[in-house]
Each structure stands twice: as structure tokens, then as C-alpha cells.
Length: 262
Image (cartoon, rainbow, N blue to C red; front, side):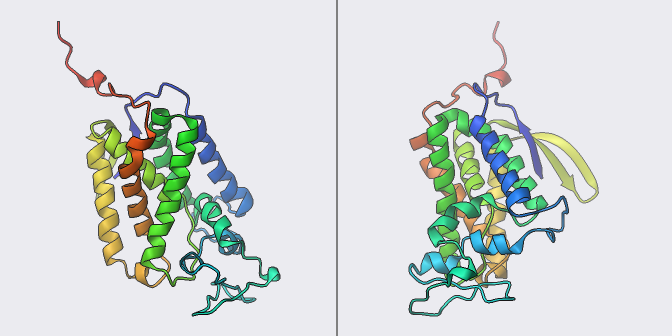
């Protein structure tokens, strides 16, 4: 099931949504050195390691992970304090909290996140204005990363991706516009069709999938894999705080679907 568009027009051009998408694309191709390959093999792994958020460092403030020459995964101390040598190039943990949410593990990862951000982000930006949207988006990414860190606090595998921040946008949208119509591509084995579904059904199913996949994916507790609990944390954050940020909600978004009275 892939959402294609919604039916809520925005009152202002979504400048920040477009800016966030552009920043993610620039980071992927220019900073990460990626190509148009869907395999992700062309990505600069050194940048992902250096600027990705390492759960161990976030869960153990003051303890730095180090990258030994030739290794693909940083080595994190089991205890005590370790200072990472300058020539090993790992960015400070507080910097990676923000850089990690603008990096991606492959072209499909990038395209999927940016599709969801474009469809749902424009209306969330429209509901709160620019400064609030920046704060909401970044805080969503931070909370999502914190949720993933709680699940795997000893992981040395860098976490990257905009998924957590985008999940916050989805959670906010589900609460503000649950009955919005989402044009959705539905694929069942060899059958495909395009239908309109309520936003709550589309986003609710997405959230349930994250819960199920997170619970049954062994990678969540061994390090690596998809950060499902970042998605879950971001989504719940969006639902819980959206009313604190949204001060320009499009209250009459269902008007186009009402039967006219003569």
C-alpha cells in the first residue's frame, strides 16, 4: 500500500517541506556521495559512520566509540571513558543527532521518506506556520532517535534516516485530519488498483505494521536493520504534541465531500 496524494489543499506554498526534501536529497547525493543505484552500494560508508547517530554514545554520555582502520562498525567501550582520537573522524554525538536525520541508507529509503513527507508534510506545515514546523520536525526526529536508543542502547551501528521525523508528521496528520482522503496504490500479489482511503486507515495500518515488524524483527535487539521503534516513537510524539504546535488547523477540510443542500 503506497499513498500517492491527499485531497487537502494548502493555503500557502509549503516552503519548508520542499526545503527539507531538498536538504535530504543534497545530503544523499553530495554529502554521502550516492548514485542513482537502488542497491545503496555507492554510498560513502565513512560519512554514514561518522555522522550517523550511534545509540551507544547517546545512551552512555561521555563514552566515545572509535573506528579502527579497516572496520565497518565503530568499537564502543563496555565501560569507563574513552576519548576518540581526532584522526578517527567521528563527529560529536550531539552533532549526529541532527545530521543523522538528513542521511539515508539507499535510494529507496530516500524516495520513500520524501514521498511521505511531501504528501503529509505540506498540510502539517500549513497547520502551524514555519517556525513551529521546524521545531516540530526536528523534535520529532530527536524523540524518534531516543526511542530507538532505549530499545538498543548498546548498539554501535550508526542510525540514519529521516523516518523518525517523518513519522512525527504522520502522527500529527492522523490526529488533525483523520478523515482526509488519501489516493492509495494498493497491491495484492499480482493485482494492483488505485483507491481512496481515509487517512486514519492508511496511517493507522502503517503504524500497526511498525509495531508488528518491530516486535518480530530480531535485528531490533541485536543492532542494525530498520529502526522500527524510531518510527513508533516519532509517530506517537506527533500525535501527542500536534495540538500544541498546530494553531492554523484547516478545520473545514471535509467541505468538498459534503452533499450540497438546496
